[in-house]
Amino acid sequence: MTYRILLITGWGGGAELLKPLHEALEQKGYSVERINIFNVLNDDILQQHVELAVEYDVIIGWSLGGQLATILVNQIQQQYAEQKVLITLASNPCFVAQADWMTAMPVETFMQFKQSFEQDAITTLKRFGLLVCQGASSAKKDFIAMQKLIRPQPIALLRDGLQLLKQLNLVELYENYQGKQLHVFAEYDALVPYQVMQKTKDLAANNSSIVSVEGASHGFPCFMVEQTVQIIEDFIQ
Image 1 (cartoon, rainbow, N blue to C red):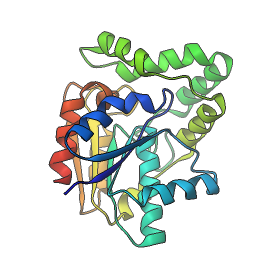
Image 2: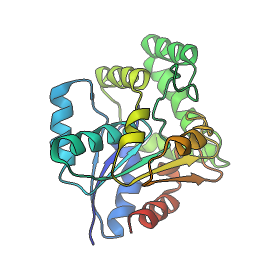
Image 3: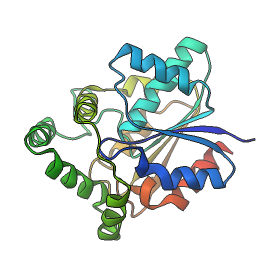
Image 4: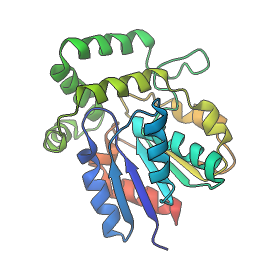
């Protein structure tokens, strides 16, 4: 079967970051569309994306994109009574620590990051890029490769994205989603604590799988493309 796949990128660098993954999936015969982050807190924008996503079989999101993918599959389940395959890559259901989910970035750390973004967006984005690559033995090479794929993003969209990262808590959606779901974590992720993997296992629905990528950074969907494709294929086939 030729699955139709919708790929959603993470915060900060634009949809080009997932171009290598997109192309590798197409080479395997899948039909793929790749989109940037969007503001799910805006009802109209959310609905537009639900109407786009319902045309696909598999919704895959990286980092913030994984949270957006989770919201889309839940909306599709509610509005159309259809279950899409959900795959999240290096994604925390709740990125910034909240009372019921402490395995996340501390609030103070996030607020400092947000403040430094407001003061100097370019330097902050560069620092964020280093965090995306940090942990892998190929971090330096990965960072150089990433610079070629990054596209300047509208500041308003980046602000929206930070608001989403701060606010979204999708723990209940992980528990209640009826469709097949796969959550893939990186061993040396500098942005999503590795302990999230165990926490996700604890709340996982019957139809969810959890996979770990050894030696990987947060950016593994960009830099470990063959391995990522293999994990996706093993799951959807």
